[in-house]
Every structure is written in structure tokens, then in C-alpha cells.
Amino acid sequence: MKTTLDINDQLLANAKAMAAQQRTTLTRLIEEGLQLRLRAQGAARSDQPRLPVLKGRGGLVEGIDPLSNKALLEALGDDA
Image (tube, rainbow, N blue to C red; front, side):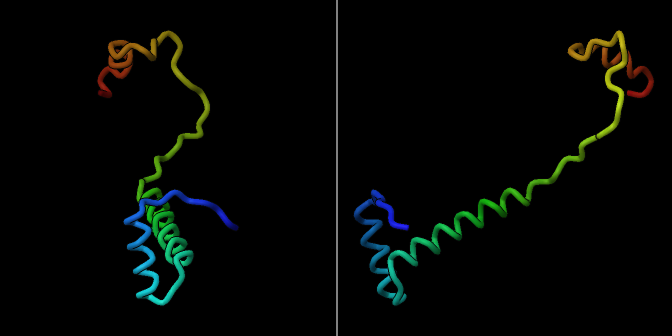
């Protein structure tokens, strides 16, 4: 697919020089760079721990205000 990019002149010159030095095309060099960046982003996401999700039934106990720290601590009682 063809597209148009607005790239810094010095960056483009450096990329063209690198492509010539590596005997590859500018297109291939850009593709490789994008692949590396996207892979790194994917790896960063997979490094994050997954939090367990409780799929139980029920909910909050009636009469306890879930927006009140004091009410929640009182409900915990000796379990805190």
C-alpha cells in the first residue's frame, strides 16, 4: 500500500544512508522499524500482571455504605 509521510529531512537522509549501507530499501527499513516498535509495545502489555476477577454472586451487604471508609472498616470489625 502506498502512503505519504512527512519525515524530518535529517532523519530521512540518515535512513536512506543506512538503507544503502545495509543494501536494502528505505521501505524495508521503515517496515522493520515499525515492526520492532509494535512488538515492543505488545511485549510491554504482556509484562503487566493480570488481576484476578471474582465471578461470584451476591454483592454488598445491605445497610453498609460502600462510599464510606468508616462504614467499611466497622463492617470488617475484627477481620481488619
